[in-house]
Length: 432
Picture 1 (cartoon, rainbow, N blue to C red):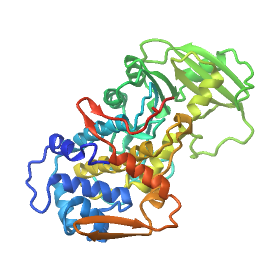
Picture 2 (tube, rainbow, N blue to C red):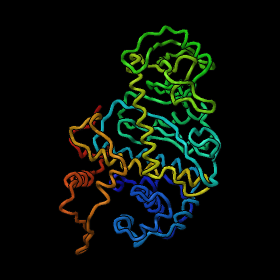
Picture 3 (cartoon, rainbow, N blue to C red):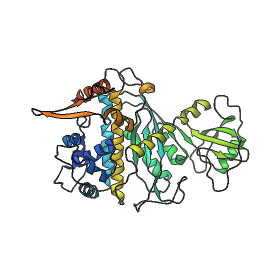
Picture 4 (tube, rainbow, N blue to C red):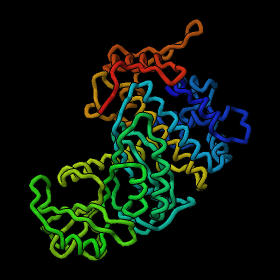
């Protein structure tokens, strides 16, 4: 698929690599690391297990992979700016939408941060927000996903300090230009870590319909108590309300909605963090959101609850794509490897777009995790053979996914570039 989408050409045109490599071209180094991450070998020293793997060496057109130290020196030779260039390559590979006939007019962006606990002496580690392992040094990357296709759209590896309002706005402003062509309506969701005036202004500047969880402040608590409360039969809360309120330092008043829960348990002991997305008072617990959407409170609460899918995607990227497996103590190397891991993660998302049923819509699309995709389409009982200059793969007659696998391969082989993009290989477009 990467060959059909012009991955090599994108790497050669985009990456700025001054060091001349001798054992392999720079594109093959990048491709080798992406494919190793995709098949589950997330650390550089794992490459020794793939040294003579026939399919990988065949794709790279080499007799064997070079040792770990060669890949380490290649990564160490790259400038920090290469991380942003790899992100641009990844965003250019969204041309897979054209080939897979994806025509989404409405999309939802889920932005979140995560905590990477550091056990060595990596650069950028800070003792900051880390509710599960207080006092340990960590990184805090910021990522934005496309909820409909589960793709990673943008992000970066950050030090362990919580992002400031300017950093959040800069991240959001870098994501909006990277959206696929044809998108008309944008929805966005974010947790209380993004509750700031800069984020709200960035959303409104891009014409986004957003909902962001609010952070507890004394003024917000007072406004919530003074608002007129009513019953909430369509949510799990005991009461609900809405009000307009200008937080301190914000340019104007915004619509806030709130859900109230009667306390049914004793107060948390000293030193125990408040439950995520809730804040307490003497009698109640609250969930408060700021939004520019006009829908009902129950609908908005349900819409925000779907944001939990982003946390599952981050967990999948960590466990299956090696997102948290830093190869070095050097900051530039770790930033570049972070983006390579997300290319491998997106590779699975794009393959699933080609794997879908023709009649499927977004609600029926489903998601196959990277670990499951490996078991279904990669780690199979098969035999690689060579005859008369031809290389082939023979699969077992008992392989249950063989019809689906053959359909996927046929669609990928049919991908062809045209003057104005790629011809769709699936008859019916994927729509909302």
